[in-house]
Length: 106
Image (tube, one colour):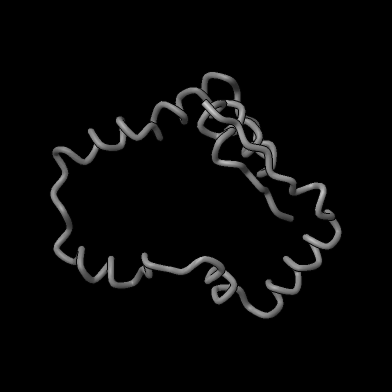
C-alpha cells in the first residue's frame, strides 16, 4: 500500500495532510494534535530548535552515509526487485488518469 502526497497541497493544507497520513497509518489523531504536529514541523520552528544545539562529533560520518546528490529516477536503485515489481503493479492498477498532475499558478 502506498500513500502519495503532492507537495503543493501539503504546503497549502498541512493539517488536512497530517489527518490523511494518520488515517493511512491507522491512527486516531484529533484536530488539536494535527495542528500541534504542523506547528512542531514548521520550518521556522525547526530552525529555532537547532539554534542552541551543538553539532554531534560524528556529523561528517553521518552525512557520508547519505547520498544527497542523487539523479532523477535514481530512487529505483534503492528498491529491491520485489519492491520494484510491487510498485510497478500498483502503478499499473491505478492507471495513468489517477496520477494526472494539476498546476496552480500564483
